[in-house]
Length: 142
Image 1: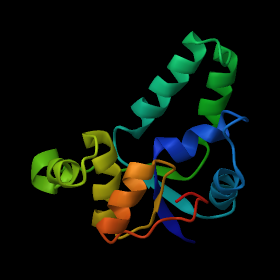
Image 2: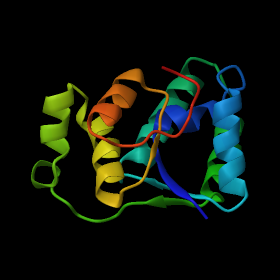
Image 3: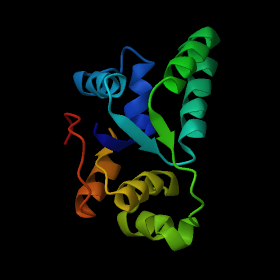
Image 4: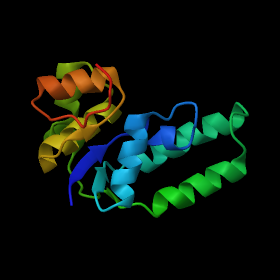
């Protein structure tokens, strides 16, 4: 079993067919066949907010959101519930150093803390991860 940190940008394409890629589908298959993902504590809210925005824009119906969330809950995605202070843990300094949002820096900090590769479609987070020495899950982007 392999593990990796996954962010919302790599998760949401599972809900939106027009955003799904071979790489994002491969992540889903990995999770369905024994691998495990970790996410920072804010990930469920970030995903839910993106889904709510999609409903409000009439991109998807609410029933699809509920089904997606049920499917998501069935996957081996472990939410990091440790109570590391964002400033002392390095989230804020990482955000400053790599010009990331604090939310994105939380994914980077978790990958560093757990010594896991990171799966993200976010180019800024990918660049910061590389600069910080964090391995990236191959996603087919630069």
